[in-house]
Length: 339
Ligand SMILES: NC(=O)c1ccc[n+]([C@@H]2O[C@H](COP(=O)([O-])OP(=O)(O)OC[C@H]3O[C@@H](n4cnc5c(N)ncnc54)[C@H](OP(=O)(O)O)[C@@H]3O)[C@@H](O)[C@H]2O)c1
Image 1 (cartoon, rainbow, N blue to C red):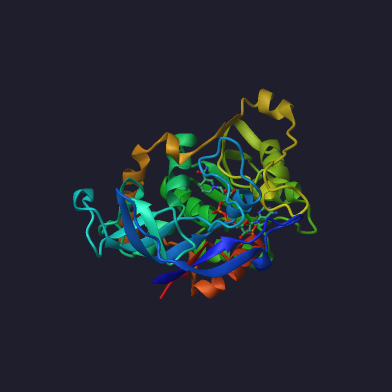
Image 2: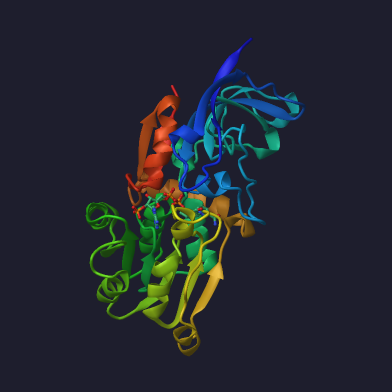
């Protein structure tokens, strides 16, 4: 029997964050495509902190269902078509993106595969979180020329793209938050941030932010929530816009369930400064996907943007990579490369 390897959830953690012992690398039967499905050999997949929420049981109304014990993990992947139905428009050898990462082969509905073509110079760049960042900064809350922008979680997969995109869209000052002074330095030195603030540092987050944004914030792209969103609202300028795309503070709270993200907000500055807060999902604006891909390809080819990521080679390193992502050990996206 032909087999492949996949990483399954062995058990949900009773407390705290998932660790490699909660996962299992198993040999399983090669997936057999049903009618309308293609067989894909995965070449890269993304390792994302969002898995903590899915492993913890998920959030009602979210676009992705929870991962149950015994099931393979999920996440964005890029792979090569091995076989496809004649009427699918896909051919063996085509590269596609889809949502069944964490396994060497996947049987995927042809409708759920996005052909990659040559829109981006490196296929792995299709695993960037840039589409969400771009949509949030153009549709969720439009960046205006000269804006002072805060990207919380600025060193994460989404944040490393968002800081660069904000600048390309005309922001005047771009500030990012991150988890260590070393990463703060890299945000400024490598990704064009003007300043970076550090969560968990001896100086309170709000005081660092007030110093980094002495004239206040025009736009907040929030991937963290918690004290970072509270502090950002406190220094918002009149008419500031906050676009909320993630909740890392709740998602990665080892003392919490991973499925809630509480924020304490002072409503006075919201009212008096007419600040707007808006949740954003790129699924609300599907038209931005092609627009983003074209602009990303142009920016990459012109050297105006990078796809900050770390490549981890081999399925056997993937479980550890998830722990490293949740511990904030890397800058940018983390991608597992399968040989
Ligand atoms: N709305 C959507 O469609 C959409 C799409 C994509 C992602 N998201 C959400 O956006 C958020 C960011 O996604 P991502 O892929 O960029 O995440 P990610 O890169 O997987 O996040 C990992 C980073 O989180 C940071 N982190 C760790 N513990 C933290 C804590 N307690 N508080 C704050 N930050 C912590 C660490 O960075 P530092 O050490 O630098 O702090 C770590 O490197 C997630 O909540 C994700 O679910 C939403």
